[in-house]
Image (cartoon, rainbow, N blue to C red; front, side):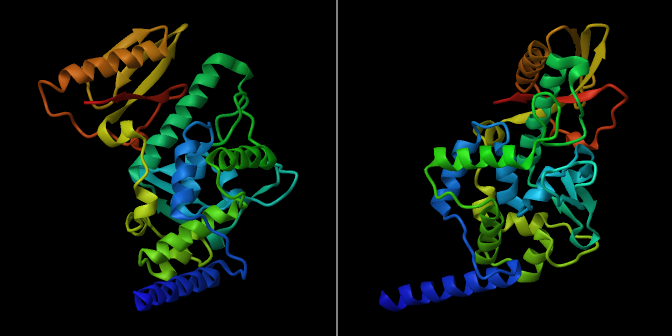
Length: 303
């Protein structure tokens, strides 16, 4: 028993040493499995919680996260990371700079894709409420008026999540460290991990398969996503009302004044359809071409 414990401690030391070498730091704080579990559960109660989970899933830096735009999300559930915020106070006029050395193309886990869609739906709701006052729809992280979120504001929510989860108040970089630690512990090659987090240059890299090797990063999903399906719905504003059409069901569309009621109607229709046919797999929202003024909402069903 003592020898087994000694072996585990040696392996732990080796993993941490390898992680330090990848990150390039002598100080290496990371969250335990129990802390990650607590953070995940609490984060679902916060608007930006999905971004905390994204950082735990792919090891993205804080500056890179804040600089993300919706057009960085591409086909086949890919995410391009090619810029970061480098100035404080943060300015999107000169704070976002291209960094070719950290460019990477990452395949996101499907649960993360759907959760990002839900965040986008929240922005659509803000647009409907605020109309022309809504500032921009370029950035992934915005407040309810469409303004890019300052680093201090985002970090305030991050530390609130940690407080609610009753875990250590570690800096945001600890999320990246945790991804590196769990990746190495799961047996992912150190060069692969370095490319995923952008410390080793890679002109083109898809890391989805590597990410799937990390049980800690893929075992947390919203219950609805684990048992149900979310179908993309194209929303077209038309003279005060909305035309809703479901991409995966050509015969399903409706005209309605309340988008949520329309989505509820669509979800009910698909549930009834599921008793007659085998439902198709939902089309990825990022594979859909939209006309000007159109946007995507999601209709989620639970069998």
